[in-house]
Length: 382
Image (cartoon, rainbow, N blue to C red; front, side, top):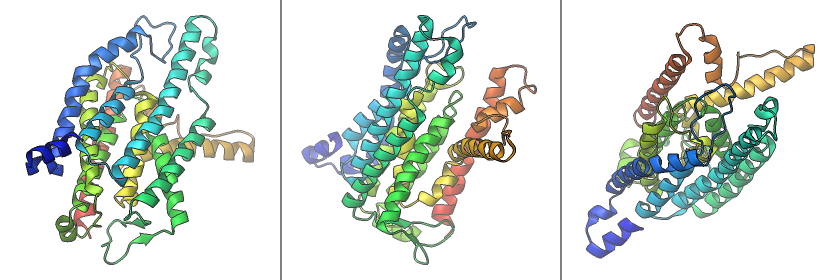
């Protein structure tokens, strides 16, 4: 770790400061993404790494798999400025494991698109193939990785023993405590669910980036406070020694996403793809559990939760009504939720880009409002 080496070499305490390391991590992530992304985009364009297929389009779709570079930058910066402990190791393992699954899924989509261009696959069957690897295999890998990491966390993080901070309730008065088997199951479900939820959210230019960014700001600040005995005691939040090492990691993710928005803002030059959305989604899940704020996840990540729930409700309601009446009915015009609003408001705007911008910006504002509200609740309302 660079900062630790500099601290021991120079004995300057600034290099050991988590606040300093978090700031440097964010800035270095921004610089690296801004510097490397243009070259990376050109390489992907040259390899025709796109998944969108439109026979009538005269322009090439932006490449996918932008998340591969983002994840690589975050891992590199985190190894430089985070001290490795149970918190950081488990989070980085989750990030790499889930991003690998997402990258394989992205490659499968690119291959399907190329098969169409070669005439080996019909355009009519493309939407089925565009899902990449099967959803059953994806979910199976999500839960397998989540279960293994949950056991790792429970064994190697001393303060992770099934406690959940309840919104609006002081920890001195009441905390939910889950037995080990239930907590491991809960942690497994949260990691897999958030990974899947961010994947659903990644449907419009920049839509998933801001919810992930606001989640990382919340996690980073909470981890910084919970890892400091004086701050945690004063604000009546759980004291979790070593948890504050998540602060530089979270800020490296936030910095990478800020720089990514430079290229992904409408019209997008590159898409994050499953390699990024799935990996960062799993990161959100494990970090919320580690800071004992799992019950705050629906507040902070309200957009991600809403997108995931819209898909679940749509499928469940359709199957239920088809079983009861023989004809399936839908709760939403289309799922995930952003597609519902695309169809609902399609006649209210002069063009589709204007419609998409309205949807995206409103969801961004909801994410920012949710961050502010969650900070007030977690630190202020006790």
